[in-house]
Image 1 (cartoon, helix red, strand yellow):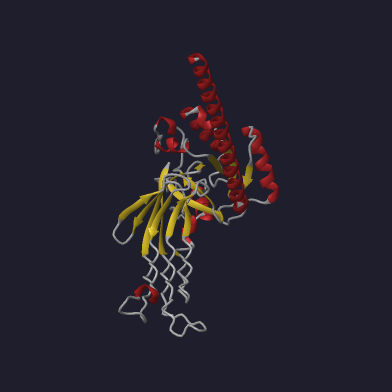
Image 2 (spheres, helix red, strand yellow):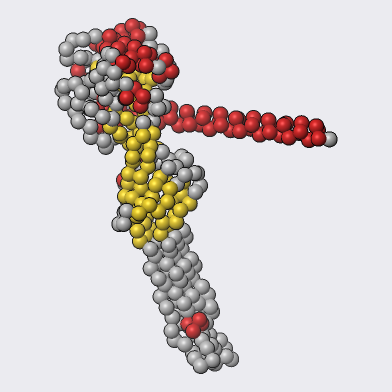
Length: 366
């Protein structure tokens, strides 16, 4: 499932350093000529593709980025130090727009790709630059030019990492409100969620993932009932599914039967989907005491023959959600490491195959 994650930032390149007016002053050289040095160039601002970043969440906390300015020149024709360029890491797939004129500047498509978004200021000139045969003692210098300033809009089409499963009113929308800044509609009647809602969950610096609140699935969804199979398609593109169950339904219905409805619909739509990594999340635990909670939890695990992770939370009070979020982040990072390791092994195998083929061809030619 693809969404657009957006952020607006301001980038300011460094100003160029000012040139100086200076004259050579040494013993026994009473009329030393001009020796004022140029200033340093201001640093530019670049956006750099980084495959370790998944979302634009961090740009909602820091919105202004400034590169270093160049330093002032000095006597003895010494040039001022240039400002350091500022490199801002962004996720792969980020599109960069000039927000003032709504113009596409560039598209980050690979790791390490750099796009300059603000040019640093040019250095000012020292008076040495202005000496001539008719002006041997110039007292003129120029200031550096200011660095470029831009308002940028970053857009990222992101794939949801985590999908939320559950019958209507299981508490999915409340959960996504609890762990992210998304504000889906919440009410005490079914189908308050009529289209997928996206939430970016920020765990730490450069640690975040995308969670999708899928509209409630009902019995017959795999055949088009309710909101249809269009949202079941979205679930197949997520990396982890959270199966949220209302542990204390207000109508007295059986949570296990409700859970089984979801499992049956997944299996009917796609066997691969029901085999996807799923975690069981028992919601609304604040409505029952600890002893009854443990008894209901064990009953659900045994009757569902559940072997995966089980979490007990209260989304409305955020009880238990912090641990769940951290565990999700760890799971996603582990899967990413495993995927990179598999790609590396496949690359090595392909390289060996190519070398062996080339060797065989060489022997045949001989």
